[in-house]
Image (cartoon, rainbow, N blue to C red; front, top):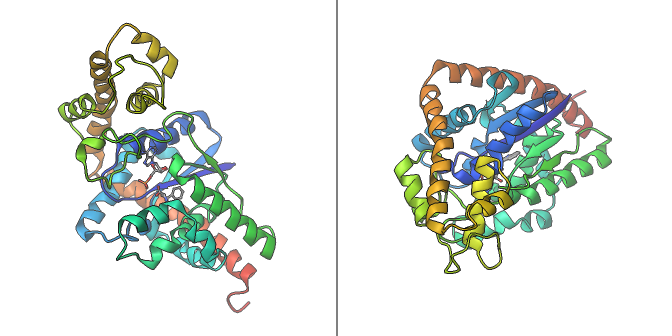
Length: 331
Ligand code: AMP
Ligand code: TRP
């Protein structure tokens, strides 16, 4: 049986970018690939590579777990767990650090971007992050990893590390393939369509969170940057802001960009934005209701306990063999 693995860091609030780039794809895959196993985790160890406020982090870990379910994942077909609750992730992360080179880590754009912004307090774990990420994936022999476009480079490095390990120690890890959505892999900031929509962004108007109320969502879409051309058309070069809104529209409604462009042929940005705002509200409202119902429930706790058990079971066996391969231990 093929296995699909992915994770999200509990840093800041979840945005529409996370939903369209990652969570929604995951839900769709689950509906489509009925013969696959789905492992999904909250990447809390990755979150602490930058300073977090403990009680906020703890809350966000559960928020993400609850949101996964609220967004439509089938809890009976998902192994949902918290990364730090399966020790073997860290154990393999360390072994993989010894199979990745400084030069490779230095080339990671996510690391370069983060260090450019915050030059004084870069932790060593931020630097070695891709080794832990590789461990998250290959520990469970993932076949596919659905992620947004920004994670492509990390996935390539994961493949390099897996291949290197296999070449050196003999075939052992499955080499995973990334699954990047055709539409929605890179949702851009609403105020600055040159950069990706991100929860660590300081300008609130630039992103929509999965917790925003209807009025806020509509207001943010209304004030999204467009252009003075005034015609609804998909032209990422000259109408970047609008192209991003069209991408969001297509991705959230599962429609084709061309069809939407056609619909607004004789219309204007105002109408287009109003409809888009409503389309987002229509999707997020039921998700929020479900989230509220589950986040404090004992059901969520049970799902996470169960997920921890299944993930640990697999990870424990895999690590025992892995350590033997590497020559660690007594026999
Ligand atoms: P992160 O929040 O950085 O842990 O990302 C979780 C997942 O959401 C990853 O698969 C990212 O690629 C995806 N993601 C984050 N931001 C965006 C965005 N603006 N557009 C599309 N996907 C995104
Ligand atoms: N690094 C990813 C991000 O920033 C989150 C993540 C950690 C992840 N481990 C993973 C995603 C394993 C997929 C698979 O978005």
